Amino acid sequence: MPRPGFVLEVDRNTPPIMFWRGENFSLEKLPAGRSRVIYAPEPEKALDDIDGAIRHALLNPYDHDPLPALLFPGMKLTIAFDDVSLPLPPMRRPDIRQRVIEAVLDLAADAGVDDVHIIAALALHRRMTEAELRHAVGDRVYDAFAPRGLLYQHDAEDPEALEYIGATPQGEDVEINKRAANSDLLVYVNINLVAMDGGWKSTATGLSSYKSLQHHHNPKTMEASHSFMDQHKSELHKSNWRMGKVLVDSGVKVFQVETTMNTDTFPKPFDFLSKREWEWNAKDRATFVGVSAALKRTPTRMARNIFHGIEAPHQMTSVQAGEVGAVHKVTTENVYRQQLVEVQGQTDILTMGIPYICPYNVNSIMNPILVMCMGLGYLFNMYRGKPLVREGGVVIMTHPTPWDFNPVHHPSYIDFFEQVLAETTDPHVMSQKYEKSFAEDEWYKHLYRTGNAYHGVHPFYMWYWGSHGMQHCSRVIIVGGNVKAVRRLGFTPASTMDDAFEIASDVVGNTPTISHIHAPPLMVCDVK
Image (tube, rainbow, N blue to C red):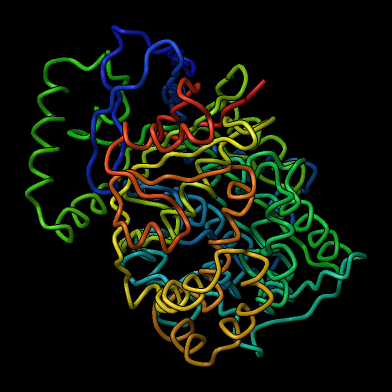
């Protein structure tokens, strides 16, 4: 059995703790007697027969007929799958999506189904490159479907490819991919990296348009979601579930396939990153010193390429298929079994090291907006019950926060950072004053539809994603960041961790309690 998560109470004998700093890391000494470090559970054992487990799930679904009973000659079958934003880091081939899609296609062929489309569920994310698509679905699937135009990516700005389904009682518009809506069966292939993923969020978000997304990707909904990792306290999820009911009532037939993964995040020689510092052996310590020193001498672009070249050894721990709600209930239990760590009470300060990757900078740059989103949108929200930091407390992040953007992937981010944030950091103000102009900008739409750019509205959504964290905390401090970039975010820069604690003392006093979330690997803190 793998060891469960662990909460280390820091004393004078505790070694320095590793903090991520983008494409590097540092060792930081936390104050003894009032600090704690939260470590993720060790990876669960992967399934022995992954392909067998997938086939069993398709033949023995939850609250649904077996997949073969739903397949027949002459039908329209659509398979949708999660995009490049997960898993993180990308997994070694064969990808889980490839294995599931191949299993579905085998059953479809046995049933004589020959009208099959495969769609990457992008929502407003950037288009995947050919290499990224091949990695996700495999060369055999790509070569059989892409040249014939049967493997393609959802376009949320193509009016001919969208279908308006209806509205929820709350007035939320439901508009999704037309091919998916009009198919005899939609099979959605999901990777549940965290509890937030999957369920009706797959179809109602991944295959939708701005017309739908604006109803739950907004400051009011995000501030009321406590947290994204707890479906029943997330207004984001409640909205998606209401939209799912509209889809079901309209006759859209969805067969959901959800998978969970273990937390085996880093391959050798980077596996020391997943270990607890006091358990580092001589080789681990030497590797840390050598890698850290080498990275300091390495140009940023080269270091970024090194890290983004990492393919994680994480693997499937469960697969379940069938009716969306029934499947997601089991999936969430499996995610919690791997990631949940019980933590007693809140603290005055929450510290976090921001790594080189988040869902929106795969093979790209972690720009300042994404640093904010990763810290306050994701790591802050890795809780169930209540946040790790008390209301009015302080969040301290470590990251270089460069004033640097990928103009191909994040063109509207540049304008958002230089124009919108120069005027306001208030999510409600920017939503009312600027969101529509970015969302409807024809140049941003063109780049989204024909290139590899995130939609024009996407930086607003990333800012909203962190709005609950901003609302909850009195101050956010970034250690080691570009001073001008940090201040543009509305945060406070600090040179060292000691400086950050000194700055925080204005809010939390001179002897605050401190929690450090030691991620990745990922965890969900069950705060009592």
